[in-house]
Length: 112
Image (cartoon, rainbow, N blue to C red; front, side):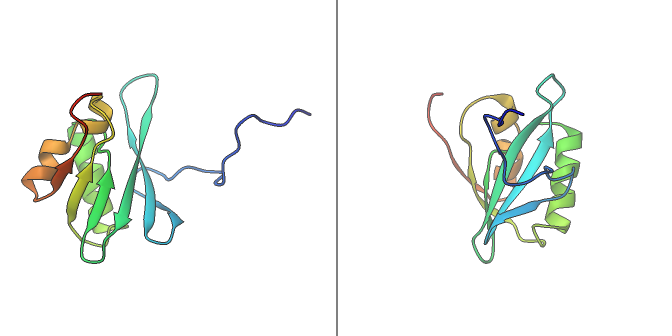
């Protein structure tokens, strides 16, 4: 038997609309993608009264509905005050405008 090159601390990724706590105040979520790479990982950091979110998922009705489920569930109804977008691919920046209209501050590189 060979040892895998990559090992993961969690056997199962979070289901759609759910989150896995990976550290105190840090949630891991997945957003679906309509392509061969079928998901993007997104993260939320608890800021007390709000969340900082890293990446957004694709801009789609389905992604927005999943975020609404996350807000009502694992995100405990708290708003996103800060959005960090790692790079300009549509699966990472896609819903940035939607988060901004809800009051989130956007932080992202100029190029990438």
